[in-house]
Image (cartoon, rainbow, N blue to C red; front, side):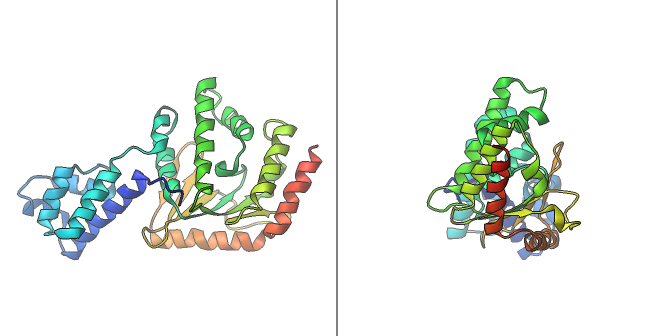
Length: 286
C-alpha cells in the first residue's frame, strides 16, 4: 500500500457495506425505498450499491436511519463516504485518462499486492519513461505531444506505489515476447531491460520470464492483473483489451485467475534465472 488513500477503494468499500446492511436486515431494495417514505426510487438505491452513482451525505444519513445504524459504525460510514468523494492524485490527468483506467489507478494506488501476467508489453508499473513514450505513441497515434507527455507522467507517477514505508508487493510474469520485442529503439529497449534487472533486486518484487519453450498455457488469450487488498477488501482482477477494460470481482472468477497465475509462475523461469535473462537480452542489444 503506497500510503496515498484512494477514493476509488473507499467508494468500493462503501457500496459493499450498504449492500451488507440491507441484506443483514433481509430487506429488498423495494422495501428499503418504502421504509424511506418514497425519498428514493429502487433504481437509485441499486445504483448506490453498484457504485454507478455516489451517495450524497444527506442521503447516506437518511439511509443509515432506515437501517438503524448509530454510534461508531455510523460515523465510520459517514467518514468513508466523505473520503470516497475526494479527488485522487490521478484526477488532474482526467483529460487523458479513460474512465476505466482512472478506476484501475485508484485501485492500484491502495492495493497491498499485485500479481500480473503480461503478454506483449513490460508492465506499465515497471516501464521507463522512454519505453512508455514509445508504447503510447504506437498505441495512440492521434495523440499530440502534450497528451503523450501527460500519459507518460501518469505512468511514472503510478510507480510511486513501489516505494515508501509500505510498498506494493509485486509479482510479475512477463512473456518472453515482451522481452525480445524491440520497442522504440535498441537503446530504449536496453535501458528498459536494465531497469527490469535492477527492479528484480528490490525486496518485495518478484519478476519472472515465461520462456517460449514453456509452450501453450492457460492465459494465451489475455494479459491480466490481480490486485489484492488484504483483509479489508476482496481482490479484483483487471483486464485491459487496449480498446476497453473489464473489472472482475466475482470471488469464483477471481479465484480462477489466481489459479492461472499460479500455473504461469510455476512454468516461468525462476526470479534469479529471469534476472539473468534480462541482463543477457540487454547485452544482445548493446
